[in-house]
Image 1 (cartoon, one colour):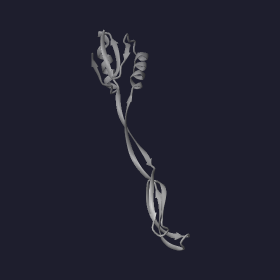
Image 2: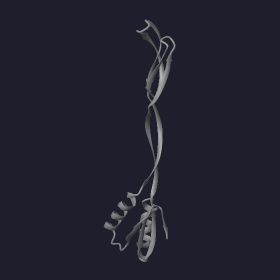
Image 3: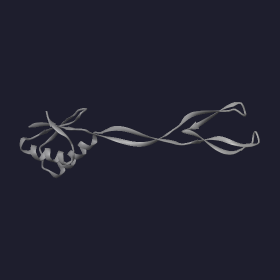
Image 4: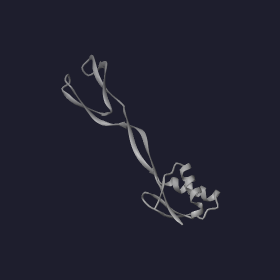
Length: 128
């Protein structure tokens, strides 16, 4: 029996995240600080009822940021081995699960088929 380590695959997931932060703006005509929550301030020319005039007033706009995260898919190897053992009469067994991946005990005569099926599924492996 030869021990093979099937290495967990990791992938990067990019998602869009809305940024919310506290935005401050000092109104020099009303002499007060105004607080907004949002991504950024955009100024729009409109009517201000409090001081009865048209001027630039702030409004919040959304800011979207791309967030990348690397995740490890540890379930992929278990799913593959379940399918492999269902369609092949194999004597290979799952020996143990480690942080790096899954260790299998594979009979010598099945080694070539086992490793070629791992490579076919783009799962990296090494002898230990």
